[in-house]
Image (cartoon, rainbow, N blue to C red; front, side, top):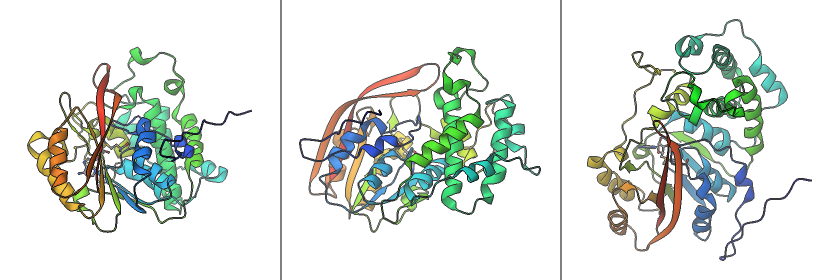
Length: 356
Ligand SMILES: C[S@@+](CC[C@H](N)C(=O)[O-])C[C@H]1O[C@@H](n2cnc3c(N)ncnc32)[C@H](O)[C@@H]1O
């Protein structure tokens, strides 16, 4: 008999929605997946009905908000994040059935060989790459945007699982990662069939008109959100925080590299990164100032970390200029994500700064 997950009820009386644990997490830099119960504990007592997750990334916080019954908009600068949010947040309960999957797996003699010819000997096997070309030949023929998004999300998570450390910074098939792990052994076709099912199981309707947007936060219309959750990239003390460098293959895959300039001279066939002011010391302080001013009519909840720049004091005083009550919640956290040669384990204090 399957064991029921233990209910997590906080001292405040709020109970964490266990269904959130079914969210198909991606190995995404800065993902808050493991912090969701704590984020819930902070959000649950707040009075709000509509919410914006302005930097949705892997989509797990927007998914939590959806599970809380809120009307949610998930936004991110990256297209693959937006596709995943269309599949899981905006999706009002549509799944891919057996016939859809058979349709997606069917050979189309007119299929292009773009992925195979571009990434042969860079990532995956030829068979894997041909498989992605095959699914992509069929995706546009699905009528429902949510089904299309589910199919692409299935490919994205399959590739993220099959790729060592889930990042696309190093070409080839380095032997040092061949430790027999199932995710690295399984071909993309088998991964895909599994991942479609994983996403199907995560789909639900909360009865609200949720949506997903792909764009710069500063291009959004800030009106209409009771609460805005902000989790921008942090200016790192070391290394860099470039999402495109790590996930360019997933970003290209999300739209079949349509209108993207591939940097052919690079070994891993990168695409140019987007500018974001949150990534640089010289622009980050002003970016936070603009962000808080922009969303000053909403309750602001900012996720932040002790290893970011600017520091906590600076952000709190910036937020106080717009909000009467500013509360800081803290907890220790350890981020795991691959950078160059080894996984970096960062012990930090994680903050949730609430401006009401
Ligand atoms: C720390 S991650 C968010 C993680 C997310 N909360 C999660 O749990 O997975 C930051 C995200 O901000 C996005 N981003 C960076 N600059 C942006 C901008 N100017 N507008 C919108 N999104 C941006 C990045 O693409 C990235 O997905």
